[in-house]
Image (cartoon, rainbow, N blue to C red; front, side, top):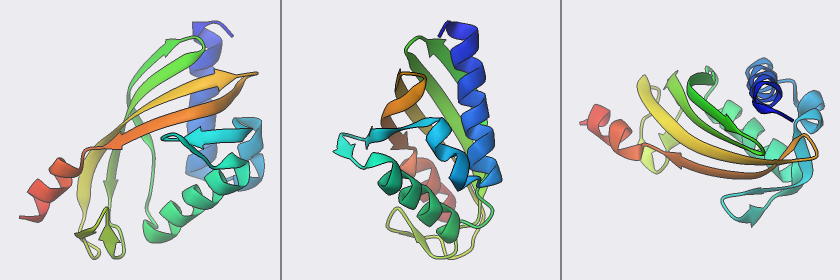
Length: 129
């Protein structure tokens, strides 16, 4: 894929997440996907995303910054959400919080094979004070 194709593919993946179209996830995510070095596989990755949506009913992925450099994507995703209970070990309990996630993806055969993710936990802690 060239840069434009990779960019479009990633945006379609984010749209899939925002639709909660779990049945279509395999179009974008490799069967052997790894997340932060852990081999989750597609089923484990889907379970992780479903759990995120269960804990954060208003979860919506907003692309704040996107850089495509085939076969990799670097993205800054912005969230404005109200998690139901604890989030990242913090007592959020339904309060609205805003934060970003910096995430890097490696694609293989047009699908996400590797994901490295870091959430700005400090931003959440600052809002809870």
